[in-house]
Image (tube, rainbow, N blue to C red; front, side, top):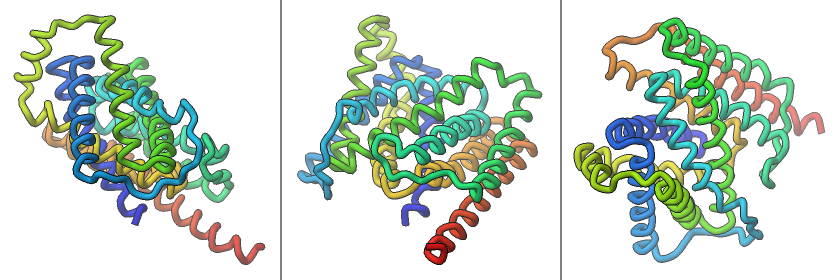
Length: 302
């Protein structure tokens, strides 16, 4: 069930990033982030009032860092919005996957923050290598158009590493205290972080309100509402799967949605980006196949 859910989460992540990027283009990154977190916090608080109680909780002890998913998420919003605008949806998503994949491999291999440890075996390397080849094809296609500046590429990579860290923090908090509690904490911390930045920068309140009104209700509300679904769904999926498997499955939805967004914006398919996506998905399939064979062989070996 969780494997089937992950690609749909990925598709929603890309669509949410596109909506947030458009809001950011109109209102600016800071105002957009304030709106996203305010809407998200209001939505999850309303859901908690209706539900009145959480689901199962592990009762395991919490550390301060378990509450920092929202803080990391602010960096995700800023970096993702910039990468989408600078590189286009499909390339920004591909580079984010590269960063998130490398982080996920390290998190699985080390049992990062108390997660179940999934050592990296030789069987999984061909699939990971093929997936990375797909990313390289997509990156090269965009680089030839002059859109892949070094700064934008680095920011896009960071936009993958940061959500990987945020996913783990939120999922571990959700496992201990409940998914909706974790989601609310994510938005509280994220909003507080953004307000601190706003106090330092001091944007014009009148201009901010005008920009949000100009953006319209869909852009103003859409990213925050969809974000609640994304954060809560990831908190459900990530504790129950290896981080790498969840990342690659989500990307199958992210990559295809990114290409569709680019097609809607530009009216043409970039054949190399499409080819890169299919190579990447082939790597995902190979990784899944070899992992299952390894799991099936383990009982016999023991």
